[in-house]
Image (tube, rainbow, N blue to C red; front, top):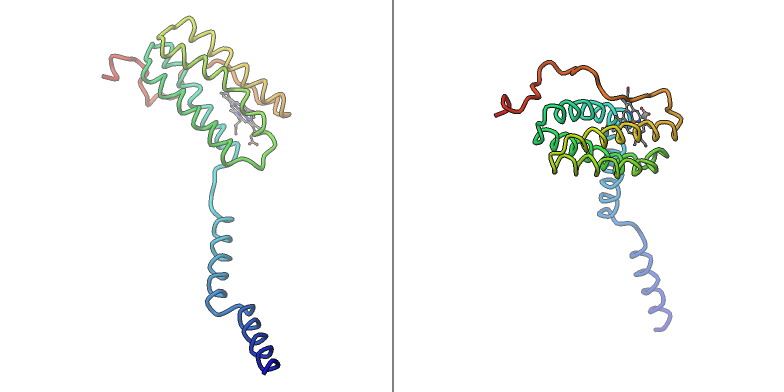
Length: 164
Ligand code: HEC
């Protein structure tokens, strides 16, 4: 009797340990989802930076034209791109120092909210040198950003009254 019980018990345990067809199906799905995830497109660090470069330029002309609504939009686009770098570029060591830009971004943001052109110019200049400080800290010192001289987006109007 005892023997039979042990045999039945070992059979039950054996059956439990064996992957059933169902778990195999689930495992296959997990494998296929993992491989899909690994091959999903995500923008590279340089692509985020190119987008930041455009917003950095547009921000300047928006501020110069006292188009505060547009300036507010542009500064938030830069902030979002910085957040996206922190979220999606975790494997790049440079992402660790991206936070150094935040105080300068906050300062430009305050100038925009206060519609203060003098503070805007000063904090924009600080922002631009912080971009370069981070490039230097990450051996990208050859990538120099500066305050733009001419507006390179001829298909966009930065003046306030025309935006109405
Ligand atoms: C982590 C600190 C960091 C900060 C802060 C930073 N950058 Fe960069 N930037 C990089 C790195 C790293 C690269 C090189 C990316 C790559 O590998 O393609 C780069 C590249 C660039 C490029 C070259 C893109 C190209 O393909 O030509 C531009 C332009 C640029 N940054 C503009 C800016 C501007 C404008 C700011 C400030 C608003 C800024 N960056 C702030 C790290 C930073």
